[in-house]
Length: 604
Ligand code: ADP
Ligand code: MG
Image (cartoon, rainbow, N blue to C red; front, side, top):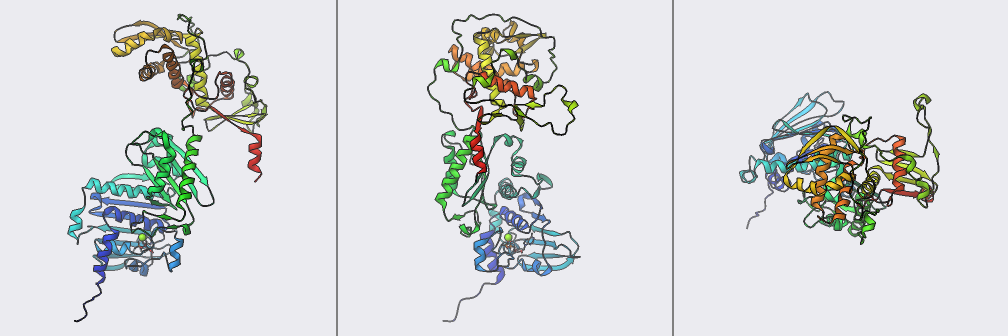
């Protein structure tokens, strides 16, 4: 019998290889974007037409290619990224197989324009189904532009197999997001049929995540940072309350490469443990950096799978790092021990009759004053308050000098230059204490203060009320009106005065001094909502809910700048509270750091 084995012609071999590399337009997008990253581009544009079926073009400002390299780049196993087998174990690039461009050129119409830095002219190449149509000099900007048209034009079966435009676009968006998230220091833009889909300026990781997933994402993110001998972990997880019903936003990157790994995903999910209801998935953006020698990314052709040397240890480190961070951000559950009523309500209110509050008209009250200004008002008189330093055992206050920097002293005519508090990041109040340092979360601390104030007002004291210049009409539905009637006496105790309660409207003529007029509707609505959602009818808990609801609505927010006096008032009032260490919702209000803990950090 004669010999029957033949070598396949290159273009056939390339077409077969293409089947492995290019499953759909999104695969082309991935390969082209990764090539641009490997070429050190700092600005990358992606243009697609009709979900990539008509056109996929990537334009970068990277290192470009020489004339010879430009032609060679379309050959199979042509790569500039590895030279010898050992290089495979020390990869810092995305590509290394030298297959992508050859495969793509085998099944599409490809046009390349590229120029290296310092060169007068660039190269323009057109290839269709592996066949060189032309190569010529051209003038083009530094970097590379590759346009891929009519994908699968010569494999109708594959072309027909493509899904609808919306599904194929979804795949492209996914690939784009993965590359963009792995490289926040590169700017990306993405146009679909000339509409811009993303325009991402370079920034840090948090900014990149927010730019892709929306402004609201920002407040959801809990930072994760850990360095150990075998890996570094950075990134964010979303707080458990923002978990999704779909397994959507879960991103693992290893050495800046997007990967999927069920085992590590399990470690993250496990760290959330009881914090997630059944059927919810945590959102995460986690970046692992490991020595290149400890991984094998070569085990899967599309390279989203990865094998680690020491998976078990990675699992344990990842899980405990996330657990720790969730705990630090006060999102882990607090111990929910059996509470007695007196624990929640530190005042004896049982036998107190409801009374109409005394009305005092505040001459300074300005209904047009902005909410933020008003929300940091303190109705308590200072002299009534005991000094917190004597109350809070174990913490002694030391007065510290704050340097007035180079600001002219006239600016401080009314302000003292000595202070014992300091605000950082418009979020924490820091104070030096004899045993070290205390950090107070301003929002949570103020919640605690207001909660106890309201509870006291509701139960034992007569609250101050301010009369409105013009009584305010607010409409409610019938159920809400019934509820308002039920709690009318308590509302009066905290300072609300009603002119009338009609079938569908209430007319408010006085409000607590802590509230501004513009907030009234929101606060009452929130209050009714909270009462409806909690255990109804138990009169004690209803009062408690009211106090919590008001505290939540009125506490100064994170991001509010506090002057020294306001900082001090928070500190003083917090430590005059019966239960200063936790917010009404069970979160830690302050933490301390002992001086020897700080000392230790310097003794390494
Ligand atoms: P690989 O990325 O695995 O090396 P490719 O087929 O994707 O293989 O690319 C082949 C070669 O072409 C690359 O190794 C690189 O030298 C060159 N190349 C591809 N795209 C670009 C680009 N955008 N800028 C500069 N060089 C590129
Ligand atoms: Mg490549």
